[in-house]
Length: 145
Image (tube, rainbow, N blue to C red; front, side):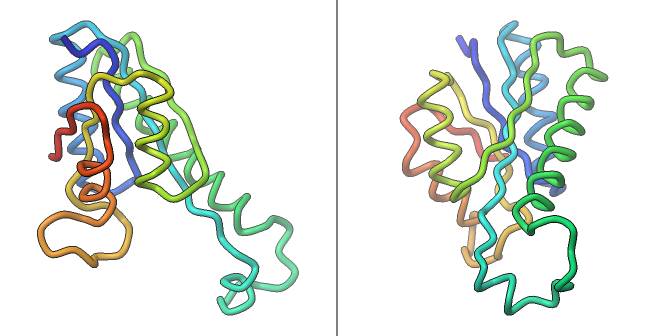
């Protein structure tokens, strides 16, 4: 039924709860598990207004990409440690909700499993803004954990 399951993670407790749920589903359906971590572009304006040190060796985008890669690799390790065999991890840059939905369409995902709140702004009352947007934009079923 669910041959390709996408689970976006951001390092939050809720995203890891969604990952564990997706791992269990993957085991039942013998499908492929795709782990996606999305980081948002850090603009020059934000850099200039932040407390960033002027003599940094790396750009903020590169720092965010490295962090996202660590999160994605940790998610993959968790899945492999729990017995998943068909698991891949990805890191993308862009607006989180739109990037998740576009990725799911491109990869022909059957199900998206994501946490109800992540590390982003807490600007929605019941669901996090990313999970709320993904449920409205996705063309496949979305399970919010």
